[in-house]
Length: 105
Length: 457
Image 1 (cartoon, each protein chain N blue to C red):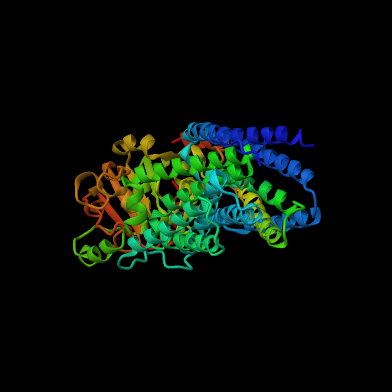
Image 2 (cartoon, each protein chain N blue to C red; image 1 turned 90 degrees about the vertical axis):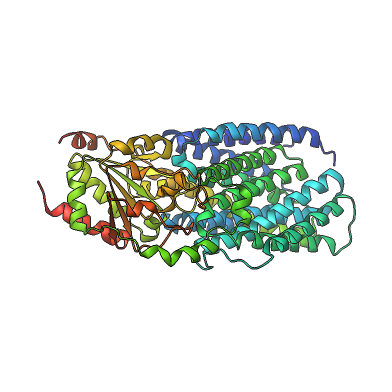
């Protein structure tokens, strides 16, 4: 395996800084959905599980571990995205009719 | 195919970055989720196409995972979002840890790759058990108070030290058959020991930290598998969790060390509970409270974990509607650590259909309290305690608070006079302008709503 880990470290550093700058701008309103979304994104580990389960050199032990990992990572992906969307659907601005009602006194 | 996959991964990474970027505002956030889903789908399909054998296993795994994940996301009530998030972290981290284990037995690498593998496996396993304990506490299967014993921190550090030493030895090229299982054992144990002594109200910081460590584990896996997409996704999640936990710590004026190893709210709670009851307070009935709210022109509601426990958010929405209809300016003041995870209150109030432009964070609304007729505290305590400003030796000294005490009058819905998580008495309760509304949050607000509904002007 030819590991270009130096390159990987650069990627990590830049992605971490980018993440910091992006997350800083996220409204505190959305901190809960942000957490479930970023968690769902990091469940991209599912690709590692797929590759390992489908690797023809894998032994039974390795394939079993990878298969369990595949299931738990998929749970994380599916539950993470769906709950994020379910939460975000609830964030609504005031309905157009309401403000005029509120202003009269 | 091999030449296309890196391009697919590149687009997936772009999707993830845009997803986080678009989370900055509620109006673009759902678009962010969609682009994140597309990124994930691209990456999964791309990887599927390259699988050499056992496509049936892979599809079965994806199907089983989806069959468990989808009901989890849809059937859990919104009040259970902190538990669900903890559970999600456990699943994701377990995946990273198991893949690390599988890679170890496949390649038995050394040097840099083994270092990354050790980091992936250590963080993965400890995040798994820590998140399961956090889930247990949030679901109240386990006691939410801090569980401590003598010499706890020393033993925790020995366990962590054991895991780190074994990780270093494995990296250096040792490969005795007992080493890796022992390494896993220490990692699992440390996860349990890390969260057991942490109390319920410190959960926002802990959940954010576990979110971060699950991300770093995924990034470490990226180094093991030489996969840039994993590195980027893991780094994004790692920094998101870290930044959130820093925000939580700042909002309590406490350090990570104090949150993780301070067993906060344990000793002091017992000491202060006895003496708190003596001083006189003024209390009021739902009828009186309704009359005061009705006569006011501006109200700020301060929700806390007590509102979530009592499930009072829907009744509060009814009260909000009635008051708003009469021209009262009703807004909500959200303290960063109110509830059990970052942003918890916002989700509950949004679920109750309260428009999000009425949910204001501490810095936005604190200046408005002196011009506000009523500050109504529902199930919050330490975050409105003026002692944080004045008393230097109190456990919450220097914690930024919502300035409820500066409003023209204060009403506090509370079951009794027990102190909050920090275990100290709240000066706010004894002020002349304060009325205590004793009762269950949901029941009391229901009565206020009835009262407001009956006397129509």
